[in-house]
Each structure stands twice: as C-alpha cells, then as structure tokens.
Image 1 (cartoon, rainbow, N blue to C red):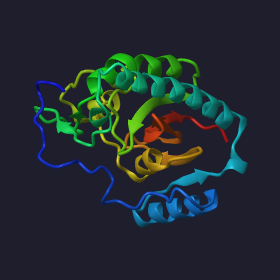
Image 2: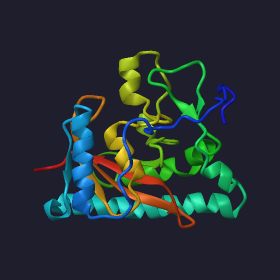
Image 3: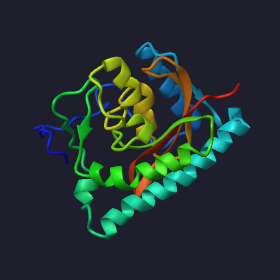
Image 4: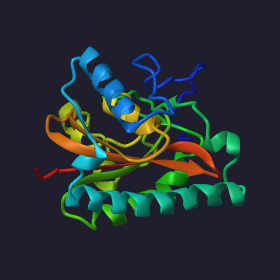
Amino acid sequence: MSAKTLPVAGLVMAGACLCAAPPASGSRGDQAALFMRSSAMHGGVRRVILPEEMTGQDLRMLALAKAAAKECARVLERALDTGIKSDEELFSALYFPVLPPTVPPTFTTFYDDYTDKFITPIEDRYLARDRDVIFLVLVDANGYVPSHNSKYAQPPTGDPRADLKRRRTKRIFNDITGFFAAKHARGVLIQIYRRDTGESIADLSIPVAVKGRHWGALRVGYARKS
C-alpha cells in the first residue's frame, strides 16, 4: 500500500449498485439475455458474442487469455504459498484512494505492490504477442485493475483527457462490461462495447481462480474483425 493513500472506512463496492451478477448456473443464452437487458437499462449499446458466433480471431484471443490467466493464477497462488500475502490480503475488497486524488479515481490495495512486480511483466509479454490486442489485464472480482500493462500505467500528467488513455492502472472498471467480465465465474464471455475512450472494441474475459476460489478475470481487449 502506497504511503500516498488514505484508508477508507467502508468498502468500495464496485458495481454493486449497477446490477446483479449473472447466475452461476443456467445456459449461456440466459446469461446473454440478462446482460442485454442490463445494458439496455443503462442506455449502453453492447452485444454479447455467443459461442457459435466466435471467429478464428476470437479463438486465438481465447487461447492467449487462457495461457495468460494460468500464469497469473500461479503467481497469485505463489504469494499465498510463500507467505508474501495472506488469504485475507489477496482477496480483500478494501480499496484505498490514491492521494492527492486523481481523475479518474485510482486506488491501491493490500496486494497491488505484489502484482506491480509480478503480474505486469506477464501482461506485457502477452500483450506483445498479437498486434490485434489493445490491452490484456488481470482484474479482481469487483473490476479493480491492480496492475495494468506498462503502456497504460504512465505517470499522471494532471490532464484528465491524457490520463484517461495513458493511466488506466489501479482503476475500478464497474461499468456494465467491466462488471460482467469480473463477475462471471465460468466459461468465456465476449462483449462488444464502447470504451470510455470512445472506440468500440471486443472484450474477451475468462475467470481466474486462486486455490479453487474465484478471484477475478483475465480481460483481453482487441480490434475484432468482422
């Protein structure tokens, strides 16, 4: 936890006020329908890509995500095995606002010092493997990004427009797309959505488990070819 942070008294419940997470059981079609209804409620123009609609590019991104997620899970489990982080720390839902306040808001946690050191290199390595990939990032179950790709973890400039694009690390992405990406606990989810930076991209996410417990997701953003 950074010295330039202030602990908050309560939890930052990312996404809790937006909508309910899709049920763990039920068909993929049911989950897609729930997602579309939730999106419509919030005025979003989003679309879920169903399994039968997946292209060769989507399958390539899925393979990339699976490999990266496996490595990230091993690194998180190693933190527990070696005692570097406790179970309570690694699964903590406490987020400490970075001070002075940033725009957009950013947070630190009990474990982001560890992910900065060991997760970012994995993300950067897989990001470089495919030119279609815009970002590849590990998020926790609330949509928090403890450590983004290096290109999106630049020092703050004080210019909100510039920082929106260049400093995306340590943010909580609790928009509809980010919420469902972080919360779904099995299979693959591909969502087409408009980012807060303006462009429409595909977001492929798969769940990440640590010691058999759902921790979050591995998200891959890419320019999907139709």
